[in-house]
Image (cartoon, rainbow, N blue to C red; front, side, top):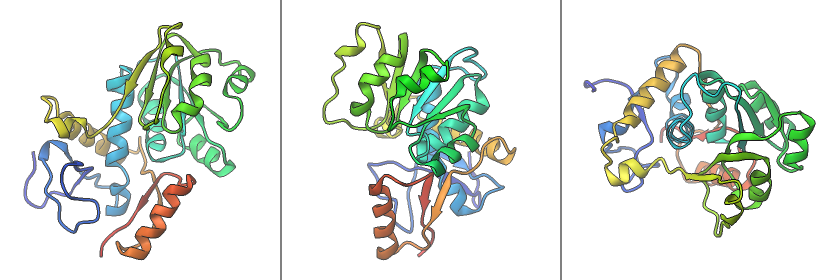
Amino acid sequence: MFQPGDEVFYAGAIDRPGSYSELHVVDERIVGHKPRSLDNASAAALPLTSITAWELLFDRLGVEENGGNGQRLLVIGAGGGVGSILVQLASKLTQLTVIGTASRPETQAWVKALGAHHVIDHAESIPLQLEALKLGPVDYVISLTHTDTYLPQLVEVLRPQGKLALIDDPAQLDVMPLKRKSLSLHWELMFTRSLYKTEDMIKQHQLLDRVSQLVDSGVLKTTLGEHYGTINAEHLKRAHAMLESGKARGKIVLEGF
């Protein structure tokens, strides 16, 4: 798959050291060829969120490329790292009507620029905003944050037999409200394939190569939101503080030592 000297990008695996290490050992099946049109920092913003978003949309929810005509997707937390690439994938590679949520004006503008057809505020009533836009029930919901908080509203706006996917870790999640509409629940963890060495683990290599091609052809763009400089204690504290504030837009990248 690779030759010495190839530039690559990857998310790594959570059962191996990484992140702030100078050198990584990575299984080639979860590595892709880096987009030639991007510098290292811009490319580094993409793998983890691209894999997560791709698997959510195409693997967990089962949406087909160029499919979804006449259907609607609601993305909760569309301005974050995963949301920023998910909105692009859904709007560029499917025919879904994409509705993203964001609470701050600058984040709403960001989500709209990434390709969302509509942007609403998740701090306000989601059902009322969808009703005002005459969007009716949605077929799919991808919840990227505070799923337990939004769940009653998500159940209300989902079409009967619709699908709900999530990535966060609610301490408790009452799924009984999903039964009346026969809604299905789909969890996504992009590290599952590498943790369990699944037979289809190489799909992450394939999708990263596809993302790279889409970036180089101008279909997708990096979701780099902030570059905090080199990897050191001060910059790491600053980056983690931003993440914990809930105000991060796109991905935060640190580069070099």
